[in-house]
Image 1 (cartoon, helix red, strand yellow):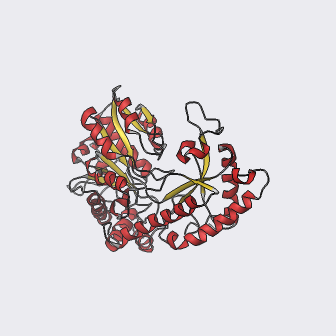
Image 2 (cartoon, one colour; image 1 turned 45 degrees about the vertical axis):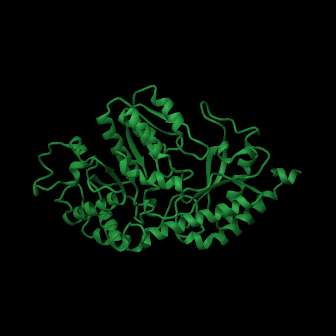
Image 3 (tube, rainbow, N blue to C red; image 1 turned 90 degrees about the vertical axis):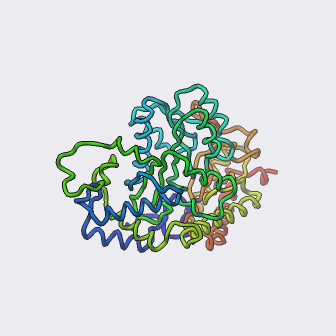
Length: 420
């Protein structure tokens, strides 16, 4: 296990990896002495009750008193269940999601044998309502996936506009809030993002991953439905699984069978210590992560060597080195990425549309796009999802500066400023 990146360190800002809270690890480990299975009450009586209470905490966070939901092994399974229900209610109708939505929706749709299409985004990586309406006019759309925190940029789709379209075109709305869902309790969101979060109470289904911002070990996802009546779709007649209680078994409202009850114990215990409510310590930590992203974004914006992407709506920052072309910027991004890693700063690379970075690359020869895709550029990306990132911004910036100097010193790639 020594062959890993230092995920716990604030100098690791690459992927969506956040250390579990010590209490979550302890509770999970203690539960493993029993190893409960939350598929049926016979397999996990106490842990099943803890799951129901923890899931109710999550539903309450979005303003839902009545709901149906349960924990899952992760966001992929949670999204699969939500789209399975959507397909049962709207058989054969198309699922649409933005081009920046997680690729899992396309894969899941293939598994469910449902048609799936993607809708273009605006320059901030958000679902374009105009393009969505254009597709809706053609008919046949059963579900629109709205992403609350895209994987690449952390962008928030404009949910209020999608809800307005729903009133006219009558489709289901599924919110993939696997990454950004917990920011519901934050106080530092920009106005447009807050409007979308405040509308989450109106969606038909929602996914959130406690193993991301919820401080839980893998795997711990959650799917929620606003209408408990969808539980009828899960009904089955099993003569051998349920025999000790007339109460609702979690396995009766889940596609998964065996599930680790320890995941529910860890989440329940963490909620008791750090309730996911506005104004609490948990919410403060999320605000600290967002402030870290804003601080890094300000430094990148003020440095002529870089071209920033969109202002962060959550805690993800993207940027490219200023260069003569997108191809040159892409090569330089990879060099900075490698140099930073050698210096102990771990970032990520992402392939994003060149227009996300504005005019500096708009008129230059772009990377040859795949068929049907717009021109892209390889950018640098940081995920500042640990509160410790805020105090580490000076060290992160210092290391990024050194890595950039090293990359710029290589004669193969010169920035436009150096060429002049």
